[in-house]
Length: 128
Image 1: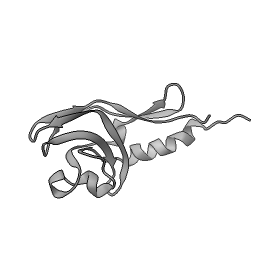
Image 2: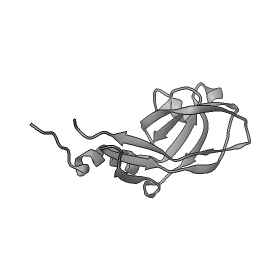
Image 3: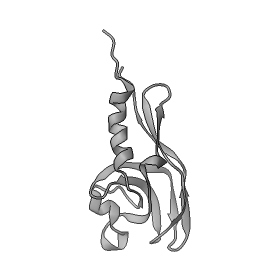
């Protein structure tokens, strides 16, 4: 018996992230909740820098080799609020931590400098 999921079904999870993300938070360490993702590291949070996003910034599409993906856009000129090591990215709404991933090439950043994060993807594989 075969398996199938309509892209509309698979997109609902990705659409929730797209439609509700307001901020990309660049963090030192993995934030475990909204407060950690949005509170600066000198106040016991994980936040080093942040930038806003809109639903229209994200792009839904087909993943390779199968499934669906949500492309989170490149953001440049993000001002660093506190020096530290950027090793996680979090997407947050106004009240919730929606998604966290690690940064494969963690980088040390300094207060007052700016950083660029390349576009990245959230993927949901097709049923197998």
